[in-house]
Amino acid sequence: MDAQVAYGFHHLRNKKPYLAQGPISNKLIYAGYGCTQGWFFTPCVKTPGLSVRAIVLLNLDSYGGGRHPWGRPMPEYLEKRNFFEARADDGMLEIFGLKEGWHASFVMVELISAKHIAQAAAVKLELRGGQWNKAYMQMDGEPWKQSIKRECSTFVKIERVAFQSRMISGK
Image (cartoon, rainbow, N blue to C red; front, side, top):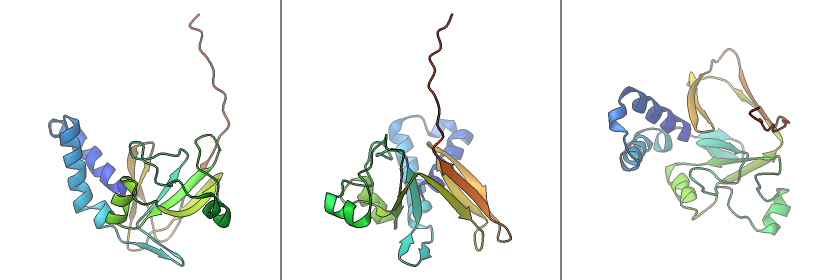
């Protein structure tokens, strides 16, 4: 849902930059997209035990301007679900769902937490078309429209890659 709205906003900003010239106008435009597509108009994904309109994978404990959609679950809840406290340095992805526009709104103002789905070190998503021929996706704030087909699967693999930070001396 958020990726579809971000995609629309991104393209409008590129086509008509004079409309998106400040934080207030940007928020109004973004809210307009959110109310006319995405959050309130995306069909639910229905699988056994799960009914959400958006699936979000985070490698940080915050999202959307510092919000904490995973929430701060009680230790008893975490233990019962075999989850861990979300941390930026734990190497885990927090995977959660947003059910509809109102649910997402309450999550974003931190009145409730998102629908906890899983925590994992790596994830492989399989996308397959049907009534849809595209999926809106977003990574690090950059939205795109992913083509999907009924006849074949599109796979998205997300995993942590070890790297070394290097200081450049400038000499």
